[in-house]
Image (cartoon, rainbow, N blue to C red; front, side, top):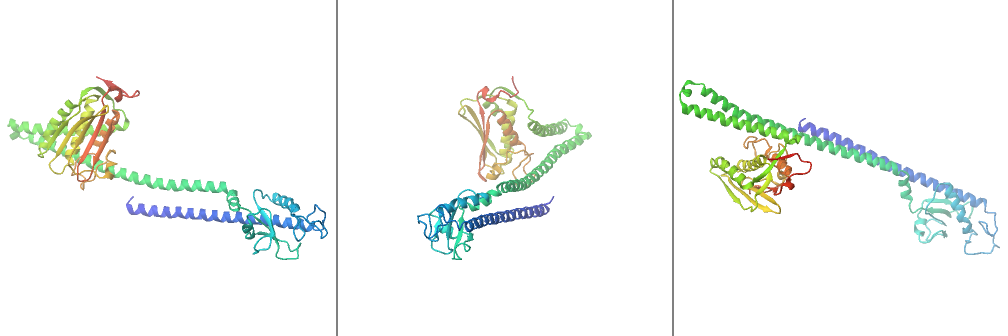
Length: 437
């Protein structure tokens, strides 16, 4: 899938997802408004029921009744219009309970737009009650047509939300899953696309790396078949040497690919034994000096570790150091200036390989230890390799219970540090399959 097609699909899918989210929120808003309207209707019906009860009891003028006559003894609970608010309270409560209206509420008798209500069940909420839309006219009881019985609910908004809470929660969860699923799908697609590009890069590199030694062996073999070459021992040795060297190179390349499969399966076995890290470094540096001298470079040794005996797999640690030196050489566009040093830190020996090459950006430093990842240098074949070296280094050092760190800045070179425990028990975990020679 090309980039344009991918962008079109993502745009259409994203637009559809945004549309679904908009519609969901639109329906949620409508559901909340509907619940508020239903709540308002229930309150108005309850208030009208209370007014009807008041009208039916208007003729009751006993002391405990809802209304008092003019000759009735007046007390604090009787208003100017003769309404006994003490008797009003149970009536309101009964009507509200029948309508399913429980919880905190304030009711009262007032004239809309007045400065204060004639009566309020709980002081301190006069302003809210006067602005309430939940009212029922008392014109059938009092001469003043504007007098109303009203109620105010402090948690009215929450009541509407609470009634559809589980629907809202389910909708939110489904939308969250949908959004995260969309994001994860895009992320997975981009990741798979990157892996596909890396694999293509790997195949191109491995094809190029295999074709070169095979072509060289083929040409050298053809030369050996010529009578003029066979008659000269010097020429015969020269071409036989070329075939041998290229065969070793091809074998090493195949071994690198096999190491990748072994690391992926986790089937490699470490053969622990006591090794002198400094002796191992001398051996590796001596053979590597020949390669660096071809470019007029050098490998400096600063072996400052006082304790350099470690239990490790000699072959794998040697390969790790070779990989780091090889990278330092390959990514030094000028004359290679490589320093290989050691020092002790806590109960570990640290092996550091430092160069003055092109360096590594912060973004690439996070990725260089990934399998088949190679820092882009402009041409896929200007720096040879499969992108397996640092992945191999990190995997093997971690298998030794060590760690790998890199310090680098673009244009200022790189410094790789590998840290290995000095004692045997730190290397071998209880479940690790290992052998000691």
